[in-house]
Image 1 (cartoon, rainbow, N blue to C red):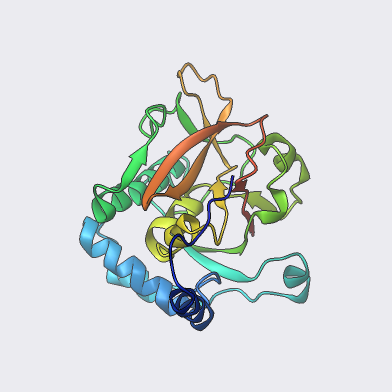
Image 2: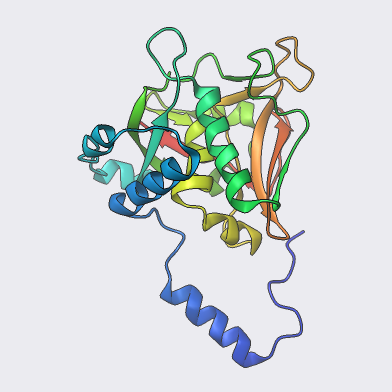
Length: 244
């Protein structure tokens, strides 16, 4: 159930809040240069050793076509592939873990993690087998927020994906913790939906028994990382889409 945004506040406080909301269109995707600055800051804080040459090689970002806009893709997000999967691509689990570790360090103690999220063991956490492999280094995706899919299960959502589209994997973690951390506040005030990252699989008990997907939310100013069954619907959670 949606909780009220205001409690025991006068009309002037409410007017002030809405003025701030209108004056700051924070729900949109931020410009590329702002995202790059956020990556530089996180890189410095976490000692990831992303070199200057990699930052200088970023861009230009792909254009959003009329077809993309018609389909709801309204911005470009900048992501980074960490590690190596042994086949020339990044390690998608490590890429998500690095972003979450940054959030834990930055927001401490206001984070919560489900005990069944285990990034470090492939029999617990993986990129789903049919998802596109993620490149090493910086890369772009076109991004669509997930409100339109809030009444679907992850399984249903995956079946509806077009040939150029996929769900969020590490990109969702990096979006909410590195390039757009203010979205956690928007989640907290219920101005945007919580998110399910449909390109990941979670086996809560291990043994490659995958039937969950990770979910990220913010409540009481605490950023949470949980899981949800792929065949159950969670109405407060949208499923954002990426387009290659």
